[in-house]
Length: 198
View (spheres, rainbow, N blue to C red):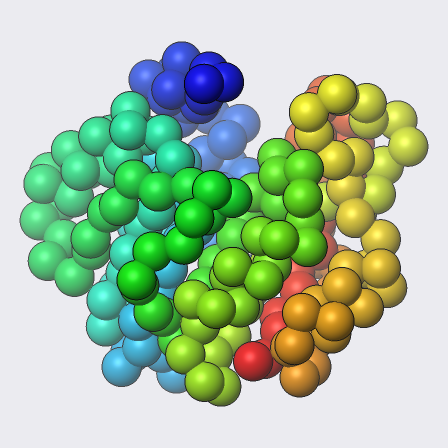
């Protein structure tokens, strides 16, 4: 089995830079959760919960899912320390199989770039959503200066939009919302938010 790099970096994951970027993303995600007090929310590929734990108060139930047991252990410690009653965690990898979990809103923040088969993961996330559910993707615009054998160098909005339409999503809006220095493999990059309705 391939080693999960995130198991190795979990304990050092919450760096100042990652926390700053997570705060910028959290602010944007919260705009999408204004009327979500009665909703079930999944943060897929949640890492150490830098975003999912901050938005948990905006929803009824938050389920943080990651393929790394060490990441989930860190989240569980944070849940206990902050006494967060509406947050659950799961260790799972949707690229291998889906779980019998359903949600009204699914967030995938800086996760798609790590998954080789974008089409399959979008199909699995679509299946996870309830009818009229909402998928929120946050990722980087395509960046020709980035190269890594295991990471996409970002996404082209129109290509992602048609992929989401082919998956079955009724509508998608994509908006750039932040440009930062050295935020993507030590390169300047632009973040976008894509919101798709099932």
